[in-house]
Image (tube, rainbow, N blue to C red):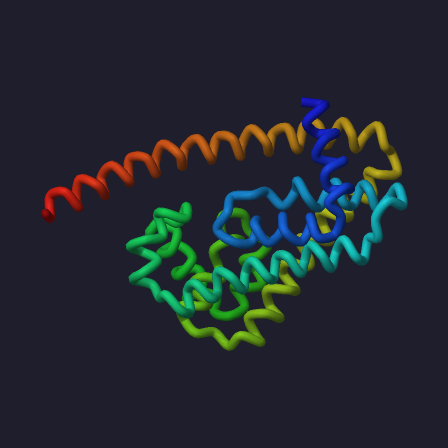
Length: 209
């Protein structure tokens, strides 16, 4: 596990700001990628002078906004019915759409700000905003502010612990190690689930013939 964590830190450093942007784009869209893997190592590298803290922040927040805009466009252009029917092929369950719609209906446009700080809501709050035709400018501002706070917190953790290199390496080993195991578990779950969905879809097509 130590080797994997060291590889992640080295990869973030090697890929640079574009890599941070891409990873945060994935995290902010429907792809189940943990933002901690990108931003905490970036903060650590910034503390060592190997990255600019400001540039890493802009890359992370910008990637989060881009991923959110992608989900916003899905909701805006395709609509609720399409996402309910076909969202299962992109890790999006109907219950998730219902959950985020209820959150958006309860808290209004500001939910695109608060939602960025809540696990399980963060990636998907953009969908009901798009479905509800929330003004794009307001959506972008709320999203960037919320994503910015989250990125700043993660960068700050990496940067602060970076002053105590031995401590952050120990923290990263446990934190990222746990995240890696979680991601593997999520992929395994969705792989089995999607296989069952595909089999059911094929059966439905054959029954309609």
